[in-house]
Every structure is written in structure tokens, then in C-alpha cells.
Length: 494
Image (cartoon, rainbow, N blue to C red; front, side, top):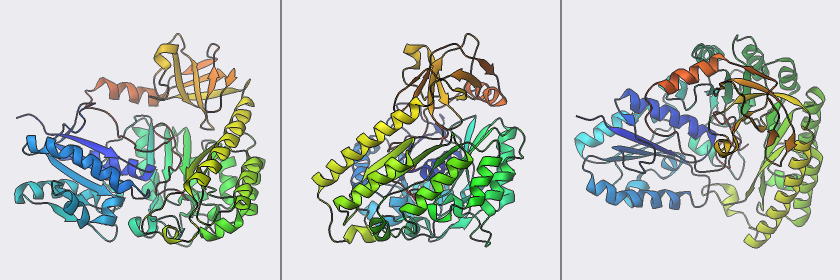
């Protein structure tokens, strides 16, 4: 009898990506194997890990489910499961609209997936189980990590904020922090396996410690990461400006393996709009944080998220966002046209902005940020940087005889392939010779090549039989394992 196969399709933010690593680990622990790349639904179990933050998220899900319906009819025993934020929100509606779905589970009980699949098979009816609170911290579950050299480490789940455009508190619950000792133990175990870069992950990562009333818990965690031998790079996402304190900036600057890179969502530069969003900071506070970060780390690359066209946004409000962008000089900005999130206060606000106005403002913002990104990248020309070689970052690497990776500040670097063998996870020292808005080039010979334990881990992993492709993402991203992702309008947007 051949082994049963599975496929996980993931939409949304980096938290969902990390959850999908857990789902893959659970399924493999239950005896399933990853379906071959390009199977496109031709697996024994297809799992959708959904996102609920876009207005058309449900349409996208049901369209995908509809395409699988005839395949399921032709394949007796095939099962379809739907989990994640949309499942948490819609519950029984999914089975009503798509009765061929076998399992519906939520954000709080992903560990139940194998049991629910087996129960659906035995009872021959759909299993819908949505927990109202977290049953087990996700990091206690088995994991099939997508990278041998870089890893997510979840430090908290949920969020205590009440932003009017965000549905996270309703779907992920209130913030729940993980014990510091458990976090450090997981990191140490990952490093022992060869991982050299970790990303601390949370919906509001720098609010870590709110459970125990320690406002400096996050900075202490960063400093503790600095003491772990073999851990070369530490990143985190996404912090909230409200909770960004001076001790965190000091910890970043004084801990050598904490990278000089920060992704901190702005959302709007207008104090009026920020108030309507229930964002607990204002333009002056945000720019003040940027100024302090740059004073402590002059070469830090700072990126952000911005929403254009929030209800009630005037031209003056939008100009305040443009002003903030000019002042902050972000290395990169992930810009989004406001879309209604069903179930959020903003979805029913008056003065919804016409689509054509939002589009015009969006294009102006993108053009400004493109100009700034290019100018900031040009400042990197002539610098010598250590690039951690990545897997799958450079789509044209084969044709250009280059490799790709990330500098310490998370900028993407394409560089000339050295004569000696280089593996993902290894570190190559190069000089930047050219800058484009979204990447850098190092066209000369490598200054140095350092083979690492992370490269050894990648080599060992790729020597073993692999089943299929990695987790599929439905929205734009950057990040570990490709490395650190910015928020994508998903549940980590702060």
C-alpha cells in the first residue's frame, strides 16, 4: 500500500506560514508524506490555511474549493480540510457552502487536524471543531520547517490592541506569552540542528512580557539570544510603535547577533487617521523612534507597512503620510490599498474613499517610496557586507551565474558565484557594486567564503529524499526562510 500524501496551501501573514509548518509536521507525524511539487490538488489530503483580513478572502477560498470538488469526486478517500482565520470566523458556513469539505478547524486547535481527518473518514461526515481559546502553544507541536538554516520561533500569540481595521483579536485571541525558558530552549535546539538565523515571531512581538508585567522582557530576550553560541542572526517581527521602548533599541545596538534591521508598521502618517484607526501613537512618536534607532545603529534598514485610503482620509491626511515617508526614508515600504475587513469597525465607517481616489494616492505613494528605496540602496554601493546565502531568492541566478542572499540589514544581494562550492546557509563577503530599488548587486569576486554549520545542515537535508514543494504563500512577502517577512496585510500587521 502506497503512503498517503498531503498538500498545505497557505494564505496571509507569517504567523500562518509558521502554523503551516506545524500542520505539515503533524501530518508527517501521522504517516502522510508531502505530495510531489506541482501536484495541484492531486493529494490524498489538501489543507487550506486561510486568511480573513481581505474583503474577498472568502471568494478566493470558495473558488479554490470549487476547483477541487470534481477531483474529490473522482478520487474516493481524498479529504479536504480548511483551517486558519477564515475558518475561525466562518465556522459552519464553510461546510454549508462547500459540503465536500471534510474538516474545519480554527486558529486555536491546529493540533487536532490528524484526529479530525481520521474521525471524518470513519464517521463519513464533516468534522467542524473550533476552539474558543488556545489549546496548546503552537511551538509544542511537531514541525516540518521549510529551511535548514533559518527558522521562525514564536514567542507569543494573539493581540491586545483594538485597531479598527484588524480582526486579529477576534480570531487569534488576547495576547498569550510563551515562557522565556521555553523560547530559549527551542532556539538552542534549532542551533544544535544547524540553524544559524532565527526570527522571533508575534502579532505584537515587542509587547512580550505583558502577561507577567515586565516591560523589559523583550529586550532581555534579545540579549539572552546574544549569548547563544552558534546563533549568528536574530530578527523579529512585527513590533508596535506603542510598545517600542528605549531598552529595546539599546539591546538591538549592543547585541552583536541582533541584526541592524527593523520592520515597524506606520499605517498612516496622519494623526487624525491614526486616531480613527485606534493606533496609540502619532507621527511625532513614530519618527522619534526612527531617529533613536538610527542614532544607535546608523546603518539600520527600516521598513514599514502603510494603508492608503482608510475611511475618512482626506488629501491633507494623505500628504501627512507622504511627509512621514520622506522624513523616515524607509528602505522598503509595503503599501496597501484599504480594503474592508468584514467584522471590523472600519468596515462600517462613513466616508469610505472611492476606489479611483485610493488608486491615485496609492500610485503616488509607491512612486515616492520607489525613489527613496533606490536612493537609500545607492548609499550601499562600495560597502563590504556578509551575505548569508539563501535558497530560492534569486529567480534568475541560474541564467546570470549568480547566487543570492541577505545582508545583515535584510537587503537582498545578488552576487557573482564564487569558484568554490557555496551552499545555502554559508556566508560570503562581497562588495556592493550596483543598486536597484529592490536589490543590490556585487559583481566582483567574493572577498571571502565561510562554510558554516548551517550550510552543513542544508547539505545533509538535501541529501535526503524530499517530498514536494514548500508552503505556498498567497500574498507578497519577504522573510525567513526567505528571510524575515514583512506583514502582508495579514494578522501580524501592527
